Image (cartoon, rainbow, N blue to C red; front, side, top):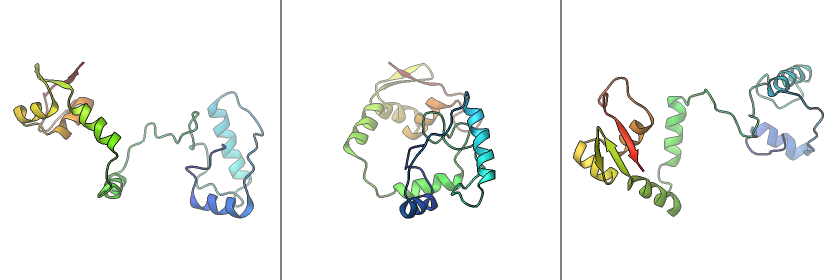
Length: 151
């Protein structure tokens, strides 16, 4: 409620012109009840608000935007990919990525000292290893391959 981040541009324009004074006017026992009341209020004040939806679908309880149960479209994935092209990674990010790939990995019962070694021996690209660690494919090129990290 009190955050100014993750708001649409219309909201920012209205706040720049009229100001911003957050007020907590009520509490509800459950998040579901709060969302239902939000929908009612948006219907009552429609036309004088900056909401772009009918309500009840916004922030999660922790204050972040909830993406649970949703998937990025191919269009949004491509848009993110294009936005990151040419942007240098931070030294911290490079180190975390390098350290992750130095971990031992077990592929089909064989333990390799690093992802690079495993990739060279098995022909599985390192990017595919990351995917295969998260998901077991039901079809395609890597079906039947079992990957686990060795701690």
